[in-house]
Length: 338
Image (cartoon, rainbow, N blue to C red; front, side, top):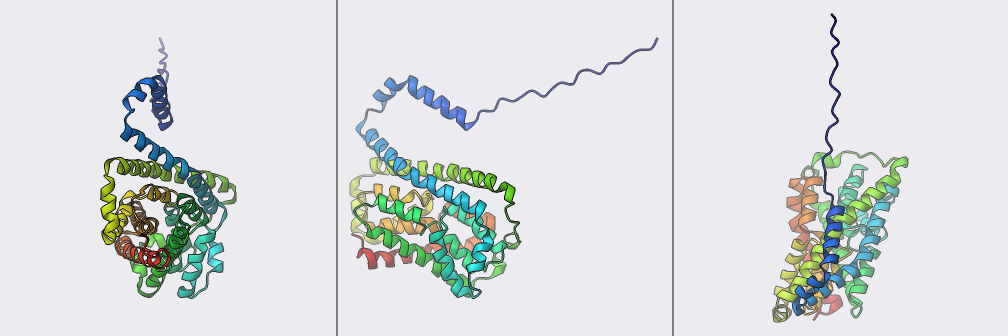
């Protein structure tokens, strides 16, 4: 008798339940709604009210500029080929640095997006000095950042001019320094390879993905910066900032280091700086010039994109140049920034 063997039906792999950030956010909002009265009693403390006011104010003021900035950054990544800038740049490195610095005014983008853009420019044959100048200029002197600075400092329009001058000088000085003493051996080989252009059919996808990624990353740093600003306004006594105001050199150094550590997005940092009301203008200006030029996240991005050998040389020099340009700009335009 012939036996018929039947194979067991294939089992479909069990779906794993994965909790996403959207579900976590919905759960937090639901808990907040259900426990609204209890939360009001718990957080009905003057210090917490002050901190929450500063936090909300910083986020609400900065968010429109952040969204506008990431949309422009995504549009540039998707619809502006790197060869456009290559065509308008002079062949001489010194002249190309000047044009690349001014191009940052017309082609805005956050500092996170400027690193891959500079990588693409080098891959398209742009001289590294000009690409690195654009890397530093685009997130610091573009119209979105300058308008955000004007809104954050409504009573001090000179801060806009001082920030523009200090940031542009930082970008161009670094470009000229690289043109004179920089070596291609310091840049990782992978960063020098030619990159393919964005395909026509995938431009909108590139735009959406770039804008989404920049918004998520920069938004996270905005929230972190707003929380730290709120905490500093509540936890740090006002007299400490008064001491920094009297010791202007110490205040400048502290704000420069703080800019590196906080790693805020350039579209939002002006509102965080403006929230430190007891701090003089010059240290705030140093914070605004140093932050977009070099911070911990930029160092990590530069290390991953251009190599460790490049970042270990480029980052410290950028910090010194940005600090020096900010101080000179502040003294000339702000008159010391008291």
